[in-house]
Length: 438
Ligand code: FCB
Image (cartoon, rainbow, N blue to C red; front, side):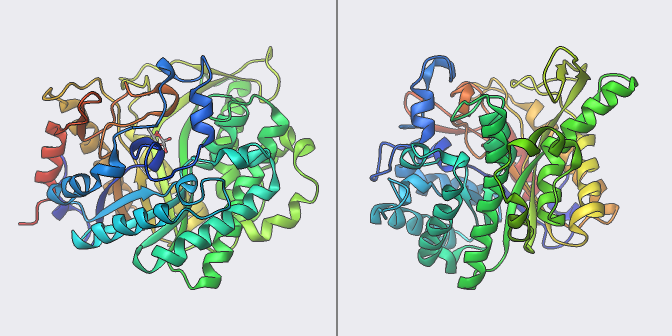
């Protein structure tokens, strides 16, 4: 059973999350090309070479999608705006794009849904990718212009703003591991992206503060690093992964410093004068978003270059993504973040969920159970004093799961990609019952 709304503190917010590129469809409304369009058009990058041109057709079907949120009893909706829709070449404004996001936030308002906006959920305009994307410092400054343009239009109607979604994915997964756009595997590119994405965050916060925008935050993803054995080398391998994945971002933002374990590998490749950006990167924020899915098990691998790491498969039950189900990690991160970094600042779980091979009408009891276990982990963290204010399920709809294409289904609502028909899954109804106000 999913713990009920009444078992959470008064005022706790429940929502669902999506992202522009994964649902909207870039074929509509004058949206510009992004690096995901070209990455997915290159053989071998994305399963079945799928891209986001139609996606869930949310650009046209948004009223019905917002109705689904309201009917489930959600209080809030976490969505992202596409930089390439607002500025197709990364610089010039597309009025249709601004109109779209205005309709969308007004649609939320009309349904009593609080808008949680994310500015960057990975849809970098191709024109900026041409100039080096996140390897180029200038992209961070252009991001400030986009931020200002969008918020000048809808800033008065959004409840919170997150600058960037999951900077680890933007930088490491995409420039070191090569798994996401732009698909690079280069330590120098990765080091620069690791820094410039945080600089973009700092620039955007600065610009928004100057505009009087309230409730500014960032969404980080956290992955629990478990050592493969008690061997000190495995323990160290896991500590380095924890530093790359988790601490680079929390310590950059909350302490204005990068962890020594990561500087050991990246410092030679960081842009000159990076230290001068740390004050901007660590400006105060108002809340932190935590995305949590799973853990990974790490072993020391001497045959590999720094960070000398090898992933070891784990024994726990796995989702359709092959990710182990590990709710203990969520509680662990929440208590650790509260103690070491946020210290009383509001925290939201901005993403948590699972993929399952669902057909329309099939039973996804495993998802209701997943939600129940992660709600319980969140409650355990609250009981230990964590200032957790809300929980957003990823995702409202089945959608474009990046390099995995459309086959990995995270939605509370099934999407038939032939007809684009939406069918709420049993987990949608289970969550609706839990959220009902009696
Ligand atoms: C997160 C992303 C989100 C979605 C989920 C499954 O890393 O923020 O877009 O793909 O994973």
